[in-house]
Length: 152
Image (cartoon, rainbow, N blue to C red):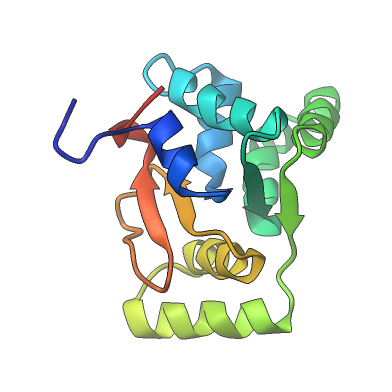
């Protein structure tokens, strides 16, 4: 376990509301051999009510791009329904979150989609954002944890 590694149960003990990046769900859907287990542990914790989970509406769109790109309507609908049924609250980009995202992007140079993820997580009251995007750093009132550093 690396110095920055943390177990998922420990993470969930410290955070009652977890925001996730789209890549967490994409790894799970794709069956990524090195990341699917950790992704599944987080998703299962949300689905069983052990923790609350949020996903930005932009993140939902990102997850659905793959099936849309392949013109796979059945997978698109199945994945969208599954995400809704898992218990993740989808956070819409309202005016307040849009302003926050602009501020984050303007102050950090973070990509706009990533700033939207962070702003939506903050708007929902999440205290941690789980991603595997190393360009996203802790700050902005939100701890960032990388999926590769979490142990299922």
